[in-house]
Image 1 (cartoon, rainbow, N blue to C red):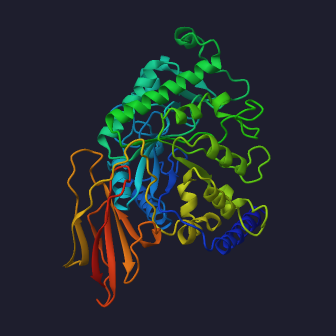
Image 2: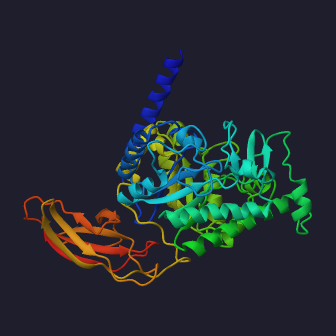
Image 3: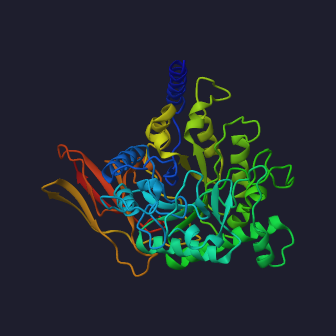
Length: 504
């Protein structure tokens, strides 16, 4: 019975996915778009794997995501005050080795490896941490150097979890120290935190912070306002700490998909009836966006169009209106999008309708996919639709002029050279003095003979690369093309181009 049910579900997803391919013809693509995917560890997908098996799994996922057009990976490295990297402060994660505090054997550093692998594929990598969660429900034993063991007074228990108390200033300092350690030792492009601030409320459970409220209330009379103040001070402190260490590292937050319901806030709330960032998690996301304490936001709008209490269209429209002061990307649930049929065309899943809404929103500049494996598995034909339509051409990262808006100088010594490995287009980096002048990546365009050079056409991009060379597709040496190479700085500001006519 279960087998027949699963087969029927898979058939439905297959046919809905095929209909997507019929619906997406002529889909517009953008030259600048954040195309991210979350790779999580907390679900245990890597737990107990040998280093070789995990590397093989990640390599396959990255290869497929690259083919699908993904240009940024958000990689979970700190699920519960632990580490999927060689931390100077926290124990190795059980989600890596199966035992918290136990180093991988043979030894390797997953974050260092991922930085190299993502950059080799022209992708950004954002290190994803959970700032406050110190123990998940499933963790039974903590390592002796875990913060909950060394400083139990700074942690509270809630619904089987341990939470670093957001009210304690030392915890804010500690998290910033951990992040600073990551930034100084790893060449990550972003630092990302998700939707866990104060814990998700559970009926009958109380947050035990009476003592901290008495100590640190700062004259704030309302407990909810005080908790929001604690979280907001942390966000500002973390933002300032990141910028002091590496000003080019993008600080991003992925909040729960509802800020406030209209019932709670008639003037600004969305027409929804679900859990709220502001009231239930004590996360004043709009304050952070409007004060410039984050560089991008990714609201997790995981519901379907037509959801009775959290309609997708209502929410993407709300975020587009109210969170425009910083780049806005949308968190998409791949499996739910593939599961639900389009309201106007039941033979198609909701992917085309959702991506049409993306295009209609003037402040939405990208998407982050929950989660990477569902894309790689091509659930509901989602991955193939990205590959063949929505993300079929490469895309540069959205601009962030509030960090840096000056373009680097153009590449130097652009020249095709015959080598023992084939015909290679080489160039060298332009001269630079400061971080915001340095060329970090390069864009290579190709135009056929007689075509006008147009940098706004993403279909002419053949690669975006951290390398200073590109292997040319030589055939007979009779067809002439114009190749153009531009430089990108850390914030994806683009230089002028250098042209080179080449026969292939």
